[in-house]
Image (cartoon, one colour):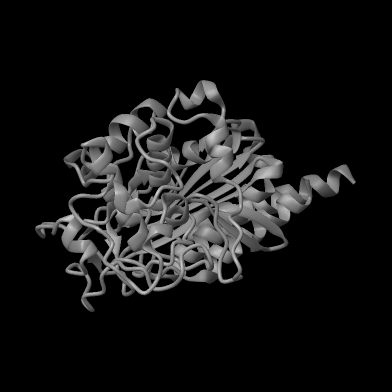
Length: 385
């Protein structure tokens, strides 16, 4: 039996090396436990899937992190951050993470509640001066931060496409009025707040304005100073700074052509840039809520509140405060997914086993098949625990 297991592991190691050599892909690795590399079937299987995917698809690079028992077990990076220069993806490569931005932004919004600047259940119009929710046939006073963060506020505008880097961005007020949308869709109340789940990036743009109004600080600066810096997320930013650009992967369209990065007025909804290392650390903190590592950014009980399901009368989707609920592959996870032009991201957290999976890539040809394949392999490993 012992020899059989050894042969089995040797087979997977050979497969990994075969793909690495035959496809001439770059693989970089970061481990908490280097000795565990050759013994980790999950690592080898995800490596195989990643190598095969970057070889066959128009997505040149993938970064994957796995969390076990509340700690990063390993990070592996496959393929290229930039194809022309053969620059490899590393654990410090910067990616835009699309709507994963929302769950990170929610930490900033919840910090406002701990500071007493905002109440979760106060009508949001009371905090606004620069722009207010327009009157509707529904009860606008029921639009609260709790409902915005859980996508139960009945608000319009599913998401945003952003603008090419170098474009002058419009103000938050103009975005909320629909001027950044091709169809001119503004943020408004389109169903009774508190009754159903309806995904709304527009709601997070409204929350971004609430933060700026109550803190008297621009959103990106607030997040850097009050969330990222004290948490040690030193390679995360809601703006494309020169430093971020220098370490960024190149974004690629569906034909593997390089495209300009997207920039967003709606930073909380879709504008976060980060690395696999930073996002994996954020995932660790979400799982453990370790007060020593939280560095007074949020209280552990606040994080646990964010991770509780908000009940509604519909089954269209499920949310906590920022964190979405998923029921895939026989397990329930919380986290978020995100896609922007040239980018894709996923973060799944299985709370009862303190496990996590984070996937980042730099291409628009993001297919559910590769995410699902990686997720399924990971989910099966969770079910065995």
